Structure formats: C-alpha cells, structure tokens
Image 1 (cartoon, one colour):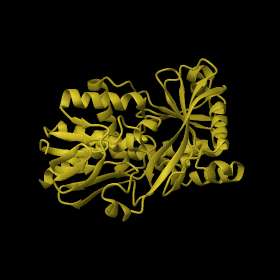
Image 2: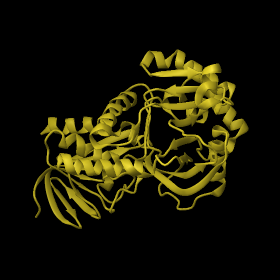
Image 3: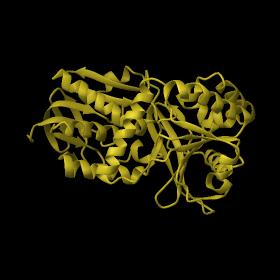
Length: 377
C-alpha cells in the first residue's frame, strides 16, 4: 500500500495536468498516472492553438478567456514558449468576408471578442503582402499558440519540481473505486479520484461514459517546411473554419459560406477539412486537418486528404511546402455537449472533452471542477 494522497488523476494530457495544477496550487497532495512513458494522445498531437476567437458565446468563451490567463501564468512559471500575438483567419471569398464583417459588427461587440478586421493597406502590410491575395483577415488578438510536444513535457516537469505533483508513467490503471485505485504499480488511495483518459472510453468507468454515447474523431495532420522564408509568428486559419467553430457557425451569413463549400468543394465538407497552420519553434509548420468520426478510429490515412490539405496550405501561404512528417490526431467527440464532468460515485469523477478544444478551455474547466470537488468535501 502506497502513501495516501488527496487526489489521484488518471491521464497526463492537458486535462489531467490542468486538474493536477488546480489541486496542487490549493495545497492538495496529487499523483498523476499515465499508461505510456510520456503523453502520446490528443494533447501532443494537436496544433497547440489555444483559441478564444473561435469559441461560441457563453460558457465556452468564458472558459477560453480564463484559460488564456492560466496559460500566461504557466508560460512565466514553467518557461513555456507561448506566442500571445493572436491568430489570423483569412477570408478567401466574398461570402467569407461578409461573414467576418457581420461577426465583427455584431457578435464580437456584444460578447467582447477582441478582434480587428484587416483589409486593403492593412492586409497588404501583413507579412510584406504575402497574404494580400485574400479578401480580408480577422486578427483574433486573444488567441495563443505553443508547441505541444515541448509544452506538455515542460509543464509536467514544472508540476513535479515546483508543486510536488507525483507522476507514475508507464503505469496502467486497471480499475478505480471510491477511495482506491488499482494499477500495474500497485494500489493507491485518495479522498478523490478523477479520470482524464481522453478518448479511451472502455478501460475505466465504461458504463457511465457509455451513457453519453461519445465518439472518437480522427484527424490527418502534417509537419512541413515552407519553401520560402516566412518567419511565421501567428497561427493561421481560413474561412473554412467559420463553419466549424461555434463563434461563427450559427450566424445567418455562415449559410452562404457552407453553401459555397458544398457547391464548389464538396470533398472538403465530406472529409471535415478546414485549414489550420501553426508555426513550430524550428520554423516548420503544423498543417491540417480532416475530421472523421466513429466508435473506433481507423488506422489508415487517405493520401488524397493530405493532398487537399497541402493544396489549401500552399494557396494560403503563397509558397510550396515540403512534408517531413505525417500522423493521426485523435480526440473524444460528439457527446451531449462540448464537455462533461461525471460523478458516478462519491469520490470519483470523470472529465471528458467532446470537441477538439481541450487546449483552449481545459485549464479553466479543471479549475471549476476542482473547486466543485472541494466544496463537496
């Protein structure tokens, strides 16, 4: 029997680490369990975009704003390389431009999105005119970007070193029950246990999770070298994202954007493709992505999907790119809402994301969950 802790967390992705931080900074003794030697799931396969601008008004927007402040705190304390200069979403067509105009004139003002719409000379001045073949660019001033493959390990190291969080890597948790966790490293006890196991819906607490009828989203992603000197310092999106992100998708003007996609490029809709580009510290670019949903993610990638994404990226950047790496992103999707926090038994919790914005809202969501737990004690 090992030492008793206040909180045991299963999963060292962004949700698990966020809950560990929220608890440890309140003085709780915390242990985190991860089945692999280092996190390999959604939190290191993603773009590292912590977006405020794309979140719909209401709880998601508020969580994203609060998470932005937490990321800023982590960057200072843990030495994360965090770009805080925002993102650019490019309008390629008249319909996309009209949608961005409507967003800026209405929803952005009403709900406090910090954005500016660049056109004409302002757009031409952006990166020396590289993006002037677009009609407009929405600058999301509060959006942030980091390199997840470096940021997640750095956050783990800081939580261990400065807040005393104990980590058990290469450790499979076989079962949990109120107050007790059974793993390949032995049995552990705690007042509270939180499962943050991403899209693994079958290993732990499978029955309460199954009641949510969740699915898994599989994404094709690329890392590439631009064949031109870009020195890109911002995350990039295009108007394709406007039918994907809740900040825009329900506006009346979005219908014309969706209709144009279905009419001219139905393959983008059919494969859930919308362009995201994130620069890495090495000057390379993370490019994606596609979205395919189901119970079990297929291990097989379609080369045509990658070709479509590369074509979109090269048009947006105005230069060719050389692919150096390909992989599958994966995250939990399509539950009853954007996220869930289940309490199947006293002392047991399950934190789940049902969208791909865990980096954007996870830190503040964890703060709320831990505060709720402490109120119950």
